[in-house]
Length: 262
Image (cartoon, rainbow, N blue to C red; front, side, top):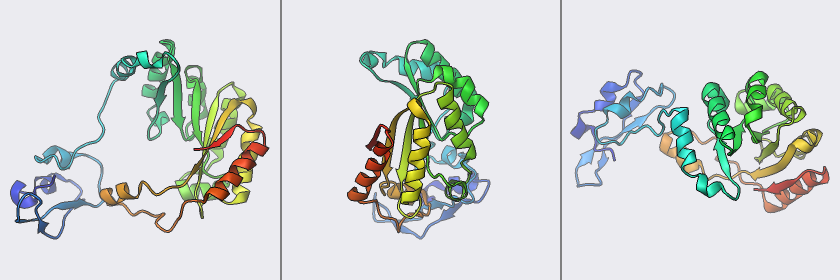
């Protein structure tokens, strides 16, 4: 939608406080045969202040998110209650919803108290006391396990895994229900040793585990990275083949776990 800085006067460039917007080489306009200069965003410099979006008269830059109250979120879900008569409910997701704990807690409580089934999609990387506080209002935790080796986990995600694993144990001990997602990414966490350790850990959580979802890596997100100007670091990683995923499923099932490929 960018009309070129020649037409708008480069309002976004003037609005950016961090110099994150750069002018690209001129290209032919889609509207006519004129040459226009569009902008690109240096994500390393961008502060996410959205001043460029506010300044853009062509709405080529827009904010994809917006603030919402607990009451507004609840009413939006409640309007669809008719469709939940035979199952279903609400999933609070993110990002990491536990990083906005006050909102997440109050929304989960309001949804749960109204009789709706509540899922919380979380990485498990939040203070244990917060999980205990919200536990009575969550029917199912959608929980990620990305790597069992803490050093490798931190290298891949930026944080170690001790808190994540201890919170999973805590939720299981306190009666929480867990649906665990295991991404299977060749060269990163798909080694047989890591999958075996993951299965052993999940088996140790007992009846709290309602389902294990094995998620084979795919590259469908590559185009989004390109649009955002980000470097797609897995460009040399291929999805795992069906035979390997089938063997991984057999491994988890052999531990008595309810598992499926997703």
